[in-house]
Image 1 (tube, rainbow, N blue to C red):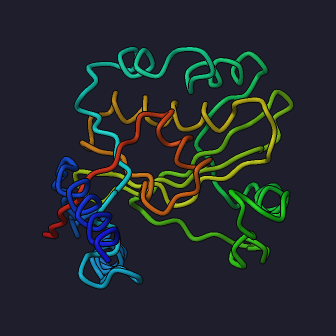
Image 2 (cartoon, one colour):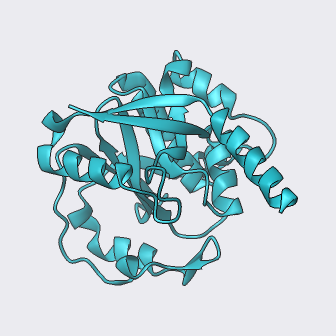
Amino acid sequence: MLDKLSLLASRLNTLAQLPVARLEFRRELNPEHVASVHRYFTKPHPKYKVIQNKSVGAALLDLRRFASREEYLNSIQGKNSAGFHAKKAKSKGYRLVEIDRNDYIDDIHAINISVETRQGRPMDAAYLQKITHFDDEKNFKYFGVLNAEGRLTGYGDLGFYGNFAAFNRVIGVRNNHGMMHMMITEIVCQAIEARTCNYIMYDTCFGASPGLLQFKEMLGFQPYRAKYSIQ
């Protein structure tokens, strides 16, 4: 009993020491969608009902820390770093582009079903059903990674909600080329240059598999306590 209380106290102390990020939803960007995402982020956590769904351990990158893309890229350098893998992908001819997903129906489906499990978990059923038409949300940007032959090998959807943006889907074929690191770093660099938001969110750190958590940390994402408001 004492051991359990000690562990609980330790975890509460860790949570209390997380930095706080005040994330603002703005309905004007896309009224119905923004309000829906705000409800989802702030509803009771499915396991810990006393906290909001996406409040504790939100994986955030504070873009205000970086005066330029170079500052961000310098912060993720080193042996086996995100910067190292991103450079490797570029050397192999991978590039980031904004896409119309309806131009890549077959490629997106092929990516979604390219492996049966990711991060030790079976692929969600939503990824396995082929989508034959995509409707864009006006507060989103849709990115794709093209290889040297122009084939789509990964894609990511980024929603803009107010003073922060959040990844919706981030997925690619499984290889060792570093193209997923390149995709995220390039999107972050674009956001730093645009100065349209203060944070980028990549779901949460708590509950992520060890491999996914390491990937987020390599890219500079850190756990925060998120406090949400909507206007």
